[in-house]
Length: 254
Length: 254
Image 1 (spheres, rainbow over the protein chains, first blue to last red):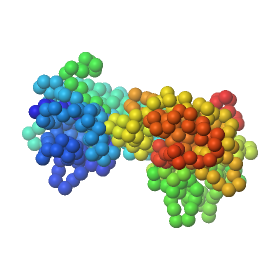
Image 2: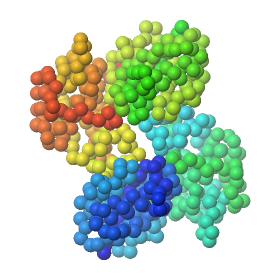
Image 3: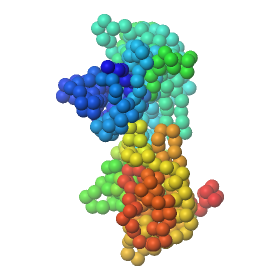
């Protein structure tokens, strides 16, 4: 057997998230099925770096899979393109380095969240991955409110709790920028994210940006350590997993 | 009455083209309906610069409409955003200059056609406006084959004929470029286009780019002046009307 590393992209709209579930169309389920068909195996098991929720997209998801040796990766890549629907693509396939694990070797994950804050100005061709927001957002206020959240903290107030799981994470970057199309983009990087964390952090920033929350609220909520109903969990379709960093590539970020 | 100039964008996927037709969802029909509701009129008549076919998108469509004086254009813009579905947007509204006609004052139209020529590499989030192509395309050969088509010609070989209508057009630009995502983009500018002309010109270039047609075929077909079955009419969803030029802005292009 050899371990392959896969670069994967998908439009999350028509998937019940990443994780395989009986009777549901999921990204993991679709790729495992296509791999089994193309490789003529009964079943394969795919592991990913970031288990995205229903409706969340990916451009730079990373996975690994163990397959019998002597598969031609370029032939496999081409055949997978034919075996998969066009809302999920395996962009690249390569032999993984020794000891590589898509999930446990990952050092950081980078997500984007995209919002258009002038509903008349939103580009219809981008509406599946850019959230239309009715009220104008103050990007500078959002950046000021987000900067105290950086670093290692217990993000319990921004996570949907799972029994026994830690909610301590290191948030490396959470910055907002605006392009000339009335489109805002958050760049969010952490070692890892707990469930619904990016969408809750974005909801806190949007609350400040539209003037509904005082600038210090996101930090106060973090310190309180419990979920707060004033913090919205933003819709999934604005969120895209853009990139996953591994040890060898870490120098690019630091 | 005053004449308003509208900047319009749409995702063509769920429209039977621009022109209003009974019992069909069309861009003209949807915007006329929304304008009538917001302005509390029985009916309004919208004129556009480029009557796009079913499935074709627009980012820079321009229209005019005559409405009773004293409408606040910013209020109208906001209300239209609420009255329209999110696959069509009126981005901007302004009083039109004296004598302005969205169709007859237009000096040029610019379209893009987008293709990804490595099906495994295509971005699922762009699949609604970028055509996936199975064979690799040679951009240099496509540019060489397109350049003899520039200038004023009878484009009958590249048009679906309409009785009594001229097929003489001035093609100002038809250039191909490639970005790093295995995505090609054609930039196509003419005074005006006849029916299916951009998609046929793109089909000729793609035939050359994939090596199926000799480089001189597009020019020979133009000179022959009759439609040729070797020239594909490319799918509509790769095509986007990007910009319309008017007299006052003409200096920007020349």
